[in-house]
Amino acid sequence: MTSSIHSSSVIADGAVIGNGVKVGPFCVVGSNVVLGDNVELKSHVVVEGHTKIGEGTVIYPFASIGHAPQDLKYDNEKTYLEIGSNNTIREHVTMNPGTVTGKSITRVGNNCLFMMGAHIAHDCIVGNNVILANNATLAGHVQVGDGAILGGLSAVHQFIRIGENAIIGGMSGVESNVIPFGRVKGERASLAGLNLIGLERRGVSKSELKELQKAFNLLFASEGTLDERIAAVRDTYTGNQNVQMIVDFAIEQSRFPLCQPSKKK
Image (cartoon, rainbow, N blue to C red; front, top):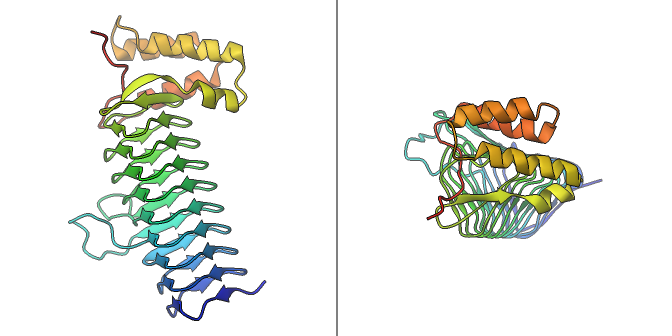
């Protein structure tokens, strides 16, 4: 299938354009950009830098993809942005490449939805089937696990990890790591429980949900140290893969602590 490029768009020499690509009016594609098969740029889209966009991804007007990271230490080094397949990137979304002080790459998975005004900063790693609602923002070096959902106007501090299938409430500021299946909310986000609706949608049975809830309660109980509680959860629920996913996340080395339930007054 041949590609379709509007006469008002500018495709720089060196850009690699796959089969079936559609480039609408007034787009700009830089010389180091790779557009996979069936990528569509609706109109007024700018893709620059060493950027690779996977097949079937659709980008809406006024998105800015691959421009220099918003990091004062960046000095025009050769760094990268890789976006997977079948993503939907809506109006005014911004995504930046990595930095040499990070891993030199920003990576976005497959089948994600980035709503209007979402921002992916330098050196972020975003999994598959992730949703960022309107104006949700990731600071540099953030990791987002598969299936996570970030509500509108939420903001994630640099170097934070968001676990798989976690859900972040709208207008929440996330300053600590969110466990897989965690549900957080609040101006300075606290852990409000498990993402039970998301777990049900994944086909988790009621008996498994009960075990997950018990494990959650044990992990965030007031008795003992966090390390002791993590060990207790690990040993008590050895056959539950979802619980072990939380345990593995909790013991991973990180510069930030786990997001905790708010303390009752």
